[in-house]
Length: 217
Image (cartoon, rainbow, N blue to C red; front, side, top):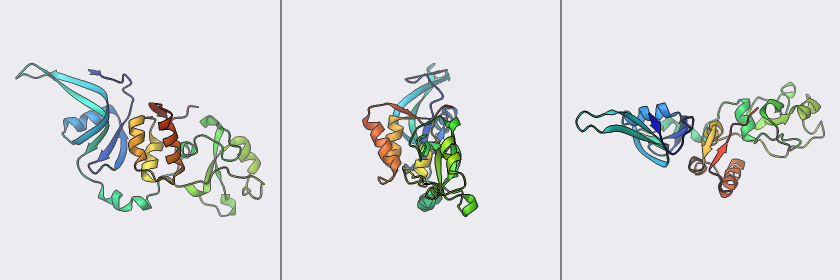
């Protein structure tokens, strides 16, 4: 039986290592497993829900596990800690579009995911690579107009400079529905110079409790 402050059990939990490094998003089942296996070193944030188990034979009381929005598990990710500055996340359209807030970087308008495309700023045909720093979110109209040209050749201008997300930024971009406390936690691991830092800071100051990073079709 499950109950708690949030009735939506689809809410993801942010898992970190014991040093506080964000690692991944997990569902409530995996969170409960980690609590039950005593792998949770500490937790923070808000209580999401309480999972009730069976009744204990020695005192007749019902077992329960409170699941928080952020949990730290035992152990550290030494390889990640050593290589996080060199980490390059896998490139896919969903996280690319989230990086750019579903805004076409040419016409500056926001679109549903189904109306967006991945544009190679320097086209592959001209030696461009399929890398974060060479791709931009573009609406179909702008991408069709640009074709196989560079922005300069097409007399188009980018409204923002594409960037490669850090590991913490990539964790944020993968989150479906990020709570304010989770966002604030991730914000501490995102460089102040990052466009995402400014976006999340603005959102936190807006007073909203949650940001949905899953832009619907």
